[in-house]
Length: 188
Image 1 (cartoon, rainbow, N blue to C red):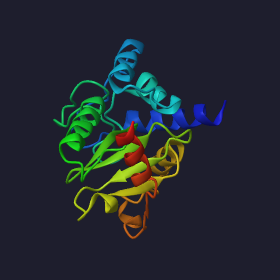
Image 2 (image 1 turned 90 degrees about the vertical axis):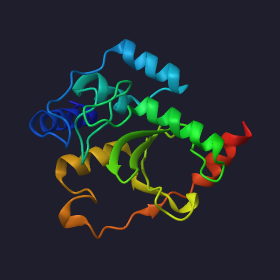
Image 3 (image 1 turned 180 degrees about the vertical axis):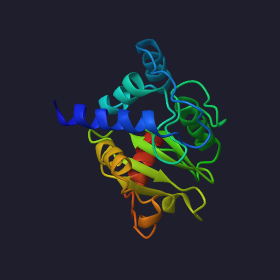
């Protein structure tokens, strides 16, 4: 069994035994056509591990805090789906250039207070970023939550994420590629 297969098995076990706030049950996995529609709407593919989460475990409804957002349909908690939120963030960025949204950075989980965990779908490691818009400036709103989606999922199943009560003092580093990624997106 590969490392990814082992991780998916651990995530699946925890997903079937815990419910994030607002999710009465684990949704069925998304099907291949939903993934294809999501990727078409986004204009980029999901990283393989993220696609596997949706295709093999559930269409959202598991993970830390409020859990993963579904791909296309709104969850029971009333938050927009991941694709809908990404497209809304891109549209908002066009209207307010002081708060650009980086191309290929997909919100996957809501933390409350307008904060999101986001996957950088343009980087092979698929780092997970924290978007914290309550900052005074867009340059201070982005942090590296985990260097990869793999590490982020491991921290959830192991109970070692920054959001755990015993780890509230952990410091996240700023995402230094924010300006590079948003400047390149506006130039194209």
